[in-house]
Image (cartoon, rainbow, N blue to C red; front, side):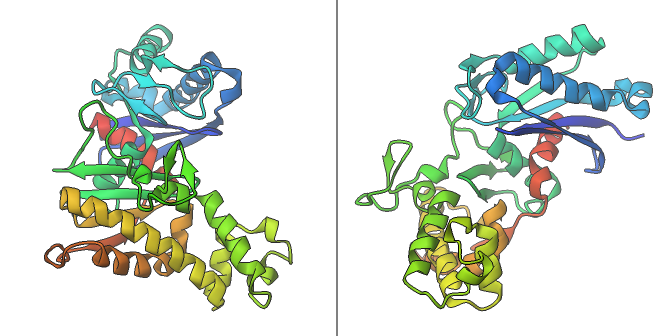
Length: 325
């Protein structure tokens, strides 16, 4: 039997769990509500409940020695020792928590298992999952971008997570590309996330649709622009609606300009793109690649490529398991 590990991905509303083999096979999956509003203790209890669910599987109980450890993804900055998380967003009541130590102690006391626990930023973990089992496998160096509520990112260099001086590297969503913008997000003006985070995309779509009353956007949202979502915008774009296509072109243009800065700094040419907004596919990828070339030196164009992510919502748990391997 292969060795295996447990991956845990802590989100603001749900915690995902998976038992993963060394070859990348999902053996079991589970999820629980995060219950973040109940505070740190409740979230920790839920993490351990999910881990206990996977440990209770017969095959795991029979081969406990083959469990290599637990890898946990969490929003926020994680220390270089892969142990401590600092002020994670969407987890009220958490400040500086030695999460690895806490979970190791509970594994030992509650399940008599002395196993390593690795903690990592959730975006880094998704990138590592794609590097280990997904779209990033062919590349030694790439950047993963997650387009969703915010703009997540993780940097892989020499097939390892690049974490910077303190563990906070990879916040590409906070790169400023318009220092004169009136959009201020997280206290920074004109960032990629502030300009094309999901909420801002919907705001822009509503503004554009209001000036184009014949757009199919009205049809897909039943004439209620407040009901617009990236999925509905994509639906209209697939139906050939020029307004929807213009919205995704605008998103791609901004994304491409931001990625250009990353190429100029790191000389990384491959980008794995995931997240719900990335479901628009070539409507975003085409304009983004065009602008990426526009905002980089011609000598840096060789090898530039935007690749759709493969693992979807499982990237985090797969990355968590991969840390143990």
